[in-house]
Image 1 (cartoon, rainbow, N blue to C red):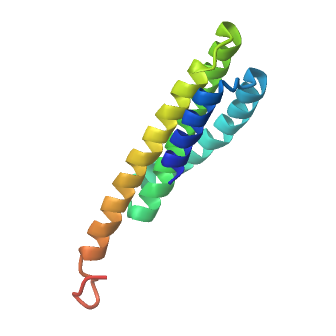
Image 2 (image 1 turned 45 degrees about the vertical axis):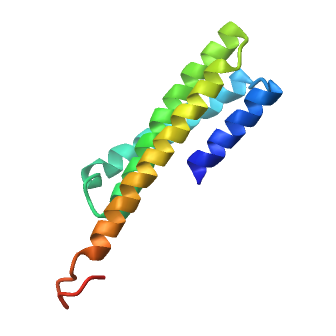
Length: 123
């Protein structure tokens, strides 16, 4: 839903010609990058864990990637005076969100189908 929402907002911004504010974009993205990288580093060893742990890892990783992309986009928006860098990053972030969701949903369904150790039955 997050990815689809980002795509809808991106389409709206494209149609209305709304320009992002590059200084605000860059500043917030840098602050968020610091915290997201710290969390991603802490969660790295659980990246192959169960669906919950993998979900937390993927979200932190995707947020850090997104923060880097937003910093770059902010610089390009400021340099070019165009909203296109911001719009492209929005599509990239939506794609990351949608693919991560697919990965986690698939893993969760696989875990539900596996028998529990105590009963031998599926969850």
